[in-house]
Image (tube, rainbow, N blue to C red; front, top):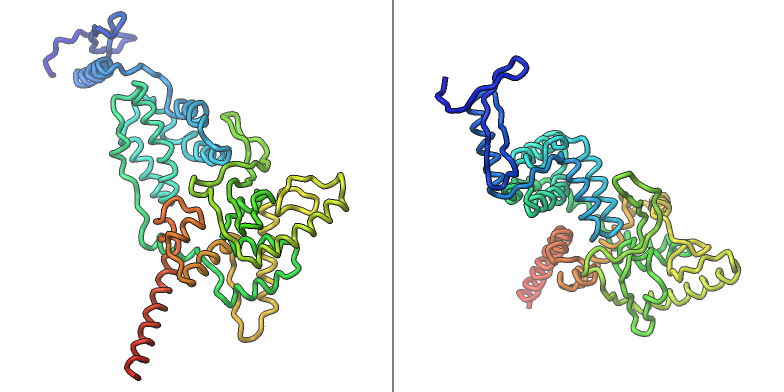
Length: 399
């Protein structure tokens, strides 16, 4: 048995080592108990360390502390759509998780690291872990800054990296229309109720939410440009009590760079003018039944468009194109509305625009996003450029 100066005390028939701890930061002495000398030594060192670092004796468990930080602190500076996204992360990955019952003052780097590793083993994606850490890390820093943790260990967390295969799969999800598909799509949507929505997406690269929020005040016909300054989104109001039914809200665009001015072709400008006149006729016909939000793209009675409804109509157009294809035309693979934005960017690259220009027109926050998103497009353009060089050298030799 190890030698010790600790006293022993029997409580309910069980023998404990104990120590009466005195410290300047304690209002009165604190009795510390343990079944072994080693355990008691560790407890005393831990308590002294906390006292000397002015660590608050917070008894909250991680889940409670995280919820209080998220809903009462973090939410103060967030957009409604971001609140909704973060509430989903809290509900799926913090609430009732292996971290839940650990006291916030006792949580360690190992606890967080093991949780992330377990999630990866269960099949969670790298992007899921990164999104989760984007919330856990600032929560830990908040605890540290408020003297609840001895140190901020978030910089030591080892985060997973995407494999080359995952990166390739992401790049393959970018499916712009080829020139032939582009032409067939435009031909098929002529006279369609959403023709101008699709044409504007193809000629501006605007995101769906930006198009849904676009008002006539945002279009400068004289200067032939569109001011992108807001986005429409179906969002549920969230709190620690739960989620309310979703409703359309207007909020600032995705990033600061998303606030931008996009030039539009003269042809599109003229089409929009005609479309506006047609819309004015509907307003007169429906009179008081028309909900005038001054929207460019809306339902027949002036209300905001529904993304799921637009998605169904878009799919039906692709199906129509494929059912009417000629023998020499190819089947168009499944596409999303967002692929119209990719098509716009691809056409710009094919016309020789620089990545920096494309970045600004798309409203990407960083040029690396543009380059990563359109890696395959740029590679194809390089091949085409090399082919042109070969043709040039062949013609030079012929002369």
